[in-house]
Length: 494
Image (tube, rainbow, N blue to C red; front, side):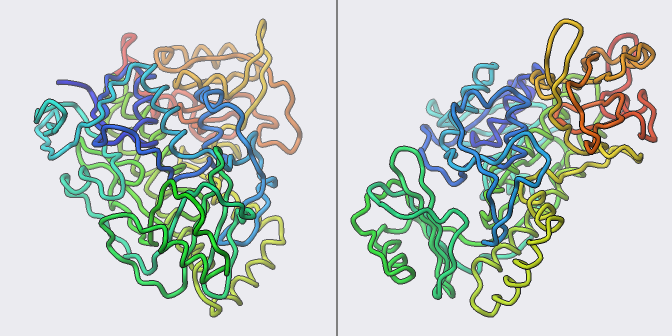
């Protein structure tokens, strides 16, 4: 075989997955149809959960100074994300083009083989491997791998060639996105509803202004090329009365509100992640972020199977955990689309929701949904409030060093965090040392209202979610370790 895993697509999902696999020592080839990066940025910024994920891998310093904000919205209704319990706020102005550069640098530093100008044409699963036909600069060739992952976008070749169903709804409207130089417009970060439609304005680095504009009642069109800037400026004029014709367009795009999700994320040795698995209205900046988190959930599981210490049951949990997240993503973006892009007939709903958001519990619920901080996986029953949730950032003091729960995840391995210096606990976990780090440390400070208050130990999966906690988990520690990290036999994992 040419590699253990072939990834189609060098967008954020594909590059994140490549890095995750390389952390576990898995050989990976990334095939990207485009010979060069386009510099286009459909995605903009990071949700709070993606900030945590990047921090878990030590990636945030690669992005330099990041502007963050606790302000957000749900369908244009303001939310206070500061009510959420998290170490990070959302990043607002990091273009997707920058994200792709930083993730590609990281994956390449780890040894990923990234091949630009290589287009996947077809695939065939054959027993213990997947065979793909590829057209590259030197002509067509065949590559083979144990697994193939489609991260090749909403029009995924992998999804179509492998026969995945992609049910959902067609677009009902059309909107324009334009990155423009030479404009001096007031920011409208959560959008503004106007009599004829909706507009949004954001300031990007390099003197670029991003505008989004959509008119009510527009008919979506299949466009072989991007819209002309004159068309975008005309819509802006009709909606706002303002003139932006003097601007210099950098990038233009049209998009709709189609909502589709693959009915399964895995078919044998072919898997889907990111936009290949789900498309939706880009409301709340969730698309790229959910795609990155798909890859973080998948990477360590796929590596575990390839490296031989876990069976396919662990790989099946990728679909069972992430498909519901995708369903919820489509649900909330469709709801936001109705609030943002419908006419005056929806105004009473907006007003009622705005009243409800004034209650902190409602604000916290919606903010948790959009930020990704609410995500909880089924890791077994129990009373400990951390079970299945993301591990909160916790400053730690060891015998000789200081660290944090976040820093412990930089290697992409599992972590058993012993907060009570319990030698019996460490002895029971010792057979899993090949894939789990056992760390004894004391929390620097834990408030009485923290979910960590009273917790003496936690088992943290490589994706940062808590798989077991004491006290309060109905599973004992070896049972949890076996479920997520395989059965140790004679010092090896099968």
